[in-house]
Image: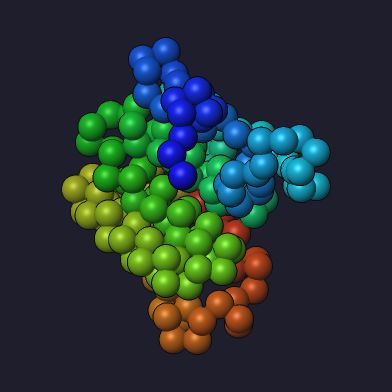
Length: 179
């Protein structure tokens, strides 16, 4: 069925003309119905602004809180903002952490294959960034513990699937100790 140009809903765009998706999302980042009467009870999750500019320390603190709250999709958005706006020498670190958060999102959504792929890809990028910087705890993040948890989770999901993974294992700490 062919659509007339006027039949499609106008796409939300940022000031530079790039497409955005302003639709409400659930806690795992899935788009919800545009019609408020069709939205589920978990609607109304705060969105991370598309144009977020954030310091490394603030990104680490916010992403840690979101991960521990079981909101890895939102943590990914924060980590992606740090990746896109941070110093060039930190981009692999933030990109890898964002990929790990997406892997956790896939696991929470029931996508074992996507979880394993993104957890592994993320750990590779974070490990490469750590080898370049030599700092195992940038911005107070416990990178060795994050890598160990992500690698272990990927291996267990690949071997046994998602049925034996506890929700707490999908809510890792990013920061060292209590902050």
